[in-house]
Length: 203
Image (cartoon, rainbow, N blue to C red; front, side, top):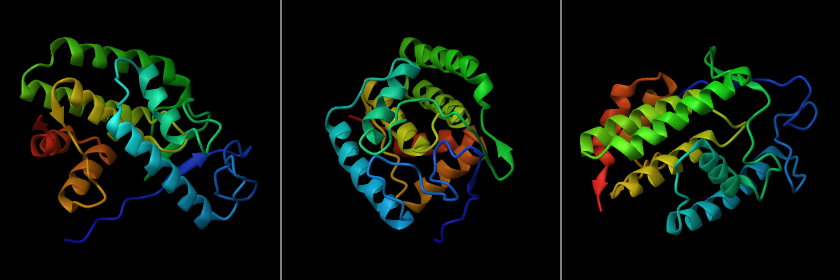
């Protein structure tokens, strides 16, 4: 089964807050300006941190914990890891949450997280709640880079807190990849619920 292609992101960043001048390469702590080498470096560093989080996950009770996860994953390469983006982002012409609305988004997501811990106990309630959290977190898209990797770790940690494993393996499984991508890119919570019905396993 072939993989669908999805549109790339557009960034409104005329002042080059995040990239080297006249380049798409993100400014990094190693000052690596070659696109391929910078991408490989990021992949290696984040993969190493992901393995550590797999063994010792950060519990997620509020948006501040989501920032901690992003900082843990990307802090070795980006100075802005764990901080909200300062530029607006769109994909396929559809804008993510504008930075001017982040305060409102944070409060709403905190409420969803509280309700998840307080009320989601049955497997079906957990699935519905995780789909809602992932849908809103993806629209929030709080970081300049690393939103997908961060949100997948957030969902894994939340599931663990309810006694489930939830591995969104987009690298190896085409069915999971398409359910996750269609669900997040198009804001399709039915696809996300289908995804969690497939992968949520009791520990």
